[in-house]
Amino acid sequence: MELIQFWSPLGIGEDNSIRPSEEEVEGEIIKIFSPTDCVKDRLASYIHFKAEECLDQAIMVAERHPVNFKEIQKWYISEQAEKEWKNFLRLLKQRDSNAKENK
Image: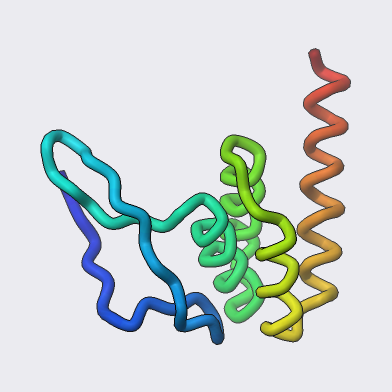
């Protein structure tokens, strides 16, 4: 198993209060991002580095896992990225509509 080690304090954008979840994998306890923090991490790369693939990854996580959209919106505002927040929501809704049409 390959692991990535995070250094303390763990932060996403300007938010330095991230507390990873603990999960047991193959008998080992690992610390991982919650789905909400994973979305914020991917969106941070989209916002700060214009990495479109990270926006796609954030949308995929949000589609497949429960996330706290109010927390993500609050984080977006703190990052001064309201334009990107609206784009994220638009694309998420668009994908949801397309998925319903294809059923």
